[in-house]
Amino acid sequence: MNVRKLIILFVSIFFISQLGFTLQRQSNADYRARREALSKKLKDGVIIVFAPMEAEGPNALYGFRQDDNFYYLSGWPDPGAALLIVPATEASGEEPARSYTEILFLPAHNYTEEKWTGPKLGPESPEAKKITGFDRIDVLDKMRDDVLAMSPKSGRLTVYTDLPEFGLESASTTPIEWLKRANAFGFAAFQDAKPAIASLRMFKDAGEMELLKKARSKRALSQRVAGRRRYASKPNPLPASASSANVLGSGTIVIVNEACGRASSLKF
Image (cartoon, rainbow, N blue to C red; front, side, top):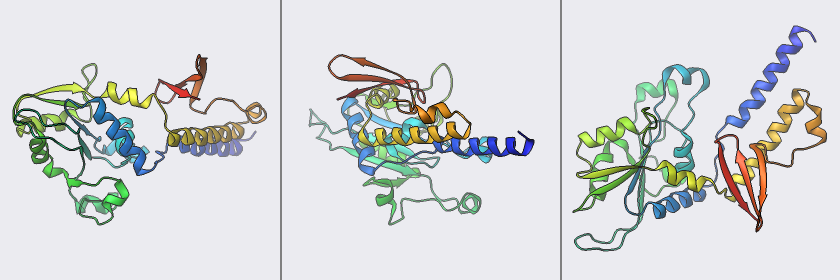
């Protein structure tokens, strides 16, 4: 095989493999169902998570990729956003009843920057609710006041957020510190939201299963381009992102997802 054919082969494999890294969006109802499910798991506090910022170096080469957990809850692909989820609560003592609330915060427009990045969706857009699936969208500048308004009038507020692991920073570290400095919380305790989100992600909904099927098809195409003909003649019975499956009792299959290193249970 000459050099030209090798170059064409590797370029083809690269672009096909990139299809698997594209964030595929599900329906707005799927993301809202996940947010409501998370609020029921963490009903003793509020959930605040932030999307990463757009880094100039790596993103200039590879493009921005949204944080997995933030995208799982919001379906929002752009940097700099934030999400506030306030569970429904009943009246207790001095605290009135509170209905379920969710707010997507988007950065204010920077029109100089948007000359290079392209136009960004803002909360003022008449299409914002339809595109995002959120009934309420605010500019990020209002987050401090919105968080304070949702805080209890007495007692300590529990804030579930993306706490850093092993001494590293998360996308939420700096913004949470800013909210502390702005006295958005009063007396607050901070807990990690990632375990509760991970427990939701272990069970795949119908939309996720459809995406797994598509990923399998893309993987098979990549393998055929690479010359691995045995996969074309003997399709792998597992989804493309699964490395192994164990059948347990009572009609349960446990699939280990290579993409996120988590096990998922499928009921049938």
